[in-house]
Length: 165
Image (cartoon, rainbow, N blue to C red; front, side):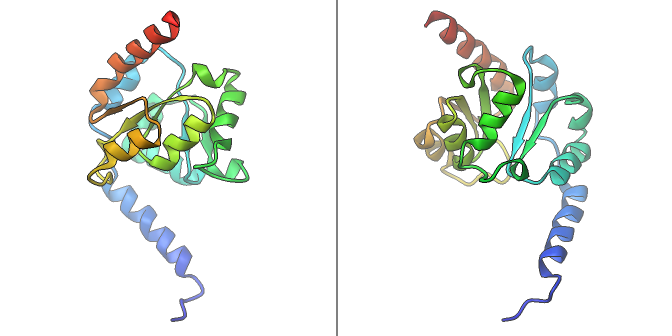
């Protein structure tokens, strides 16, 4: 079957339209972002425009004002390649061991782990399929959480573990 010349553009426009109408912030993420006492960055396999639009649609752009955004088009190979996470660490002038990543995909977990970072798997998003917690652990997630309210305690545990050894 032949697709119309603008099929990909039409699909992309429909995705953007639906995101603008239907996208909502993950329950509890705004409160967690406000409480985090650490630098935050966004690392995504999506293109920059989609990331910015998604943050705007959810209202998270105001909370993340000034947080750097790293997107797939900035590197030769996207996740599961670790390049995007390495770029983030280099740009922020931190070692990968100092980075704690929250990821919902196995590709993202694998990329962050390959970059030398600690990863918390997240299964609380609406698009996450059943059984994802096991897949995230298998990919190398240090812990898996179902709700964002778990993040502050996990950050505290991670910090204690890093200090002790």
